[in-house]
Every structure is written in C-alpha cells, then in structure tokens.
Image (cartoon, rainbow, N blue to C red; front, side, top):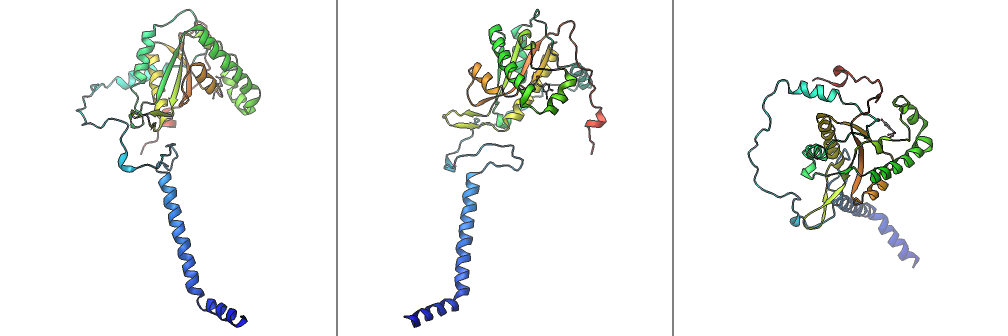
Length: 286
Ligand code: IYR
C-alpha cells in the first residue's frame, strides 16, 4: 500500500507541469465565460454613465424600434437668414429674471401658457422619445396643497437637512422656506421627466437622456414665457418630488425635475443685484 501511494505521488510530481497547465486552462475558460455573461447583461452602459437603462436579455431578432421606421422627408427650413435675430433674442433673454413676488391680480390666458408649452414640446429628445410632462396648476386649492408640501420640506431643508454652507450660500438671494409665490402666481408649471415610457406593444420603452431632454425643453419654455411677456421662477424643491407627484396623480415613471411659478411681477418686486459672466469668461475659442 505504502509503495503504491509512493508511486502515485511520484507520478503526480512527474506530471505537475501538465496539471498546472490544465488548471490554468480551466480558469481562463471560466474567466472568458464570465466576461461574456457580464457584457451581454449590460449592453447600454456608456462610459459617461448617461444612459441608465439596462436591457433585458432577449432574442435579438425580435427587436423593433420604438419609433416608426419610415423614409426620411425633405427638410424645409422654418427660418430665413436673419442677421439681427441673435441680437434680438439676446435682448429678450437678457431681460429675464427669476422673481419671487407675483401679482395675484393679473392672470395671462391659459392659451398663452399652452402655446409656451407647445414651444417646449419642440425640444429635441433622445431617440425622439419626448420624455416630458408639463402639469399646469391654476386651481387655488391645488396651488395651496403644492405650497404646503414645499414649505413643509423646505423648512426641514433650511433648518436641519442641508449643510449650513447651503443656507449661507443662499443668503444673498434672501430665500427661506416661506413661499407665498406658490399661491400668488396665477400658474404653477410642474415639469416631470419621464424616466421610461411604454411602447405600443406594452413593453417598457427606454427614454434615453430623459433628464437632459426635459431640461432642454424647460429652457425653451422659459424663453417662450419671456417672449410672451411673462415672468417666471425656477425652483427645484428638494425632497418634494414624490409628494407632488402623488398630489397630481402622476405615474411612478415620472419624476419632478423643476417647478415654475408663472405670472406678472408685483409693482414693488425686488430682485438680487446679480451680474452675469462676461463672454470671455464663458466662451473658449479653438
Ligand atoms: N429651493 C430652495 C432653495 C434655493 C436653492 C437654490 I441652489 C437657489 O438658487 C435658490 C433657492 C428655495 O426655493 O427656497
């Protein structure tokens, strides 16, 4: 017995290079299989992390675009060359200020607000998914509920949730948790980004770059409100998103991006004395 065991162990000793090779081969195969599994689960991971969706593993032959596939049409420019256009637009947007003192007495027509939202809806979006919802609130009781939610959370934000540096940085703007503009302004517009949608076949539809797309459309909305002669305030009520979404009965795929108050300033409306950066501070030429 002892002799046999000795012979066996000496055989093992003789063949250790091939054993090691075999072991390495098995490890290499395992590694390759693992990597393939990882990458097949995660098609959409881009290096900037801007595309958040992970796709389900599914038959590749079965895939259909969310958008209808049809021949492209001739582009007809909607604008003609206008050398003064940019300058006039600059003058328009230069005059825009965020205000916090709205007149409760004057109210623009809903038609104007609708046109501004039509303009916002022209924004480009990831794979033309148009991932935005604009909720317009004019009903006094709903504005009151919005204000109650926001003031409750902001009181916590200002008093304990946020870092003292946040409160300090906001001091020049003279803001606090009391927000009369949420009930004084004739309209509130709550802009939701749709984090995903539903395709025609009922499957979940990826809304690529939904935050960027909705932010672009919000920018267009601000400009069109300004063009309509209206004032606006952009607010990003911290920690209020879910409660406001529920108040308005919006679905779970929608997340509040920003809340606008819209209307006319009071006669005694004051704004912070702010300067904007010069062109040479924001433009880099190559
Ligand atoms: N959302 C809060 C606080 C606030 C935060 C920033 I950053 C501002 O630029 C302005 C205000 C509020 O509306 O009071």
